[in-house]
Image 1 (cartoon, rainbow, N blue to C red):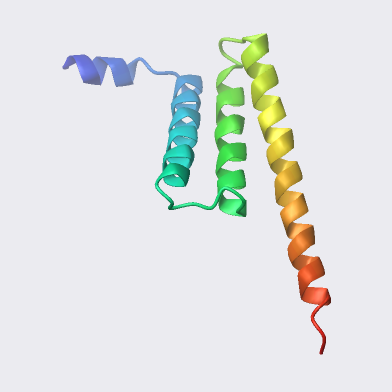
Image 2 (cartoon, rainbow, N blue to C red):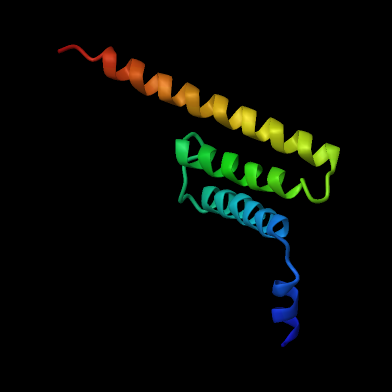
Amino acid sequence: MNVLGQFVAGLSVFDIFGLLGFAGYLCSFGALQFGLLDGNGKTYAWTNVLAASFVLISLYDAFNLASALIQVSWIVIGYFGIVRRSGQRAEIGRSVPA
């Protein structure tokens, strides 16, 4: 088995969640910077909430309080933004005259 194969075989489920979280953060921020995602859109918020959730899961194996607090904060703020955006769209739809 080559070095890469040995590395992948040695990953735990928690390592995989951490790598998925890392990829989620990187992809969402990259997509934002390249203009592929709207920073005020639900997709960007959901991607960050999912990435933070994956990183938080990965911390079960190797806990770090500071990182856990960052991930929980990111999840809470992300959900707040998603809920706020949902309410705005509903209000806009109701304010249109028939």
